[in-house]
Length: 211
Image 1: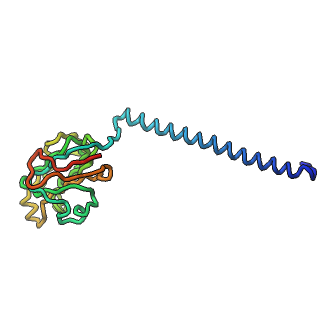
Image 2: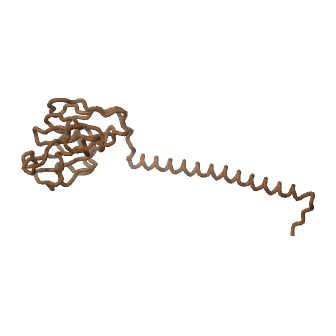
Image 3: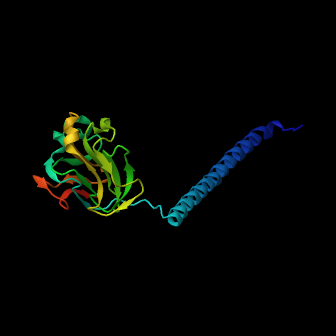
């Protein structure tokens, strides 16, 4: 049993309070440093994994994207589909096709190749994520009139054929073959600007992105 005289009670309580505060402060300080060290180790491990696997995220860079479709340019806001015309999917442009071929708009990896052949997702070597969507509501055709030439994970060069489509079959289904070209990671860029007008042919610039 602890005995504390009347004259020592205040000093005793003060000592307990100081010890508690000091202990809390030291625990907080060293605990915080330990958390910083663990966070640093986790970050280092992530970098090592990225370097050893080669899966290093690409910081978006300035880039010029070529048209994947030969035809006549349509402003995105004039597309008859609010999902695209509103810019909800990202900024971009559209083309009314005069040929039924889809070309790679840049050196890229195929991130998505829909089994129906109506749409392709690409990530370019410079970091742009591009969606090419052939026609409006053409997913309902279940691949009829579409032929896919690539698979997910394929590496392609600008101008390579991604697939083909038959505009007459799209029209027979009562659908519009206008093809949207969207930069889905628009938010990663300072600007995403359509640069084409009138008719475009293979190799023509269609969109410029600036980081």
